[in-house]
Length: 322
Figure 1 (cartoon, one colour):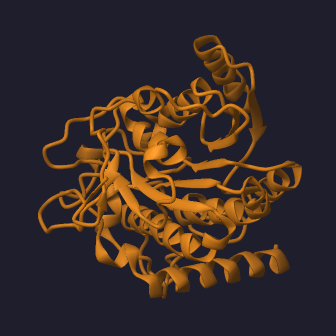
Figure 2 (figure 1 turned 60 degrees about the vertical axis):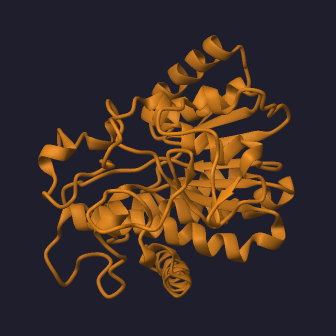
């Protein structure tokens, strides 16, 4: 359904991932979920498995991934749960994952992420949050484009955050080389980049039948995302309140995964691409003073195209210097 041009569904903030896939049959379809050994990644993978998909858990800790895979099989009866190593801050790890992938890929959920880390740089000298949350997923997704194209109707789901409201991509100083590092500014930049990536990929890959959408999962209790900061609300600047949406309570991981699963699997969003969702519906434009919606700069086509080229250039330069 559409409401004033926005995509709406019968689902909402308290819907669970399992409820989204009731009646959905993903038999014969193959999915990859990054960061699928904890938090909403587990519940995203579980819901896709419950609907019959073959699911690859792309994780840094393969031992934890193996435990998660066994748990998903136990709870869903689906034995086609695979585990593959993937470190999104390591370009060699991403390249190895892409090289090892064979055959079509129907669903890619770019779920993994870090938040408000201490100032840390990758081997390439990149700021860790931008490198992991955006560049890692950019390299992975573009690397898997042929597999996505081969599926014929693939879906890419990019997990962003309400934190994008707090800052644009700092094109003149992405890696904080010329001004002091701020963990929350860096996080906001990476989450805005997630949305801009979805906007540009949707445009570039439309003829391949690849849909690409971004989302805000909401404020989720009991995930590892805030492991660097303790209580994210208490630790963040007063203007930030990461994950908080006015009038919406904290979600559990099953509810937090619902919007990802909607975009990955539901027939309700067939053909929808280049958009940003929250609470299982397309987000409205952001209104000042309300921690909801999507801000204009995150959907800006010129910024999206610029980010795409910057990302290509950073990856190309890394290959020649590292």
